[in-house]
View 1: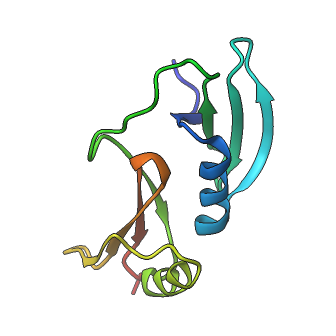
View 2: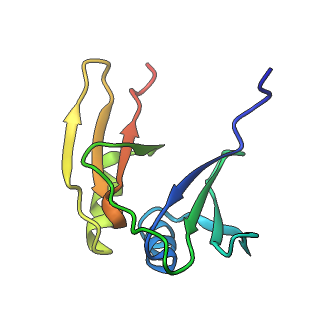
Length: 129
């Protein structure tokens, strides 16, 4: 049986541009870098308050380019306040591409666009009463 989720891999065309986005827009940090046996550049990003990592992978030149289909997949991150996150992200050049959208649960969601066509969902959970 599976014990726990360790990481999610996302293949990209420009590993440095993508890593910079995750650092600047979301505050993620580089856990480690390596080159795979096939020559791919690999960067693992640490996420706050979570053991799971995001693996960013750029294949060596000659590999077919990544073409992300609309709404193929997204990563979701919890934020304390979506309004405050959106204010700070917009000031850093990363405005919401969708939302904020109130949910019937009392939470709020919004999205920002990551490089390569991936989306990032931001979730403000309902406040406990």
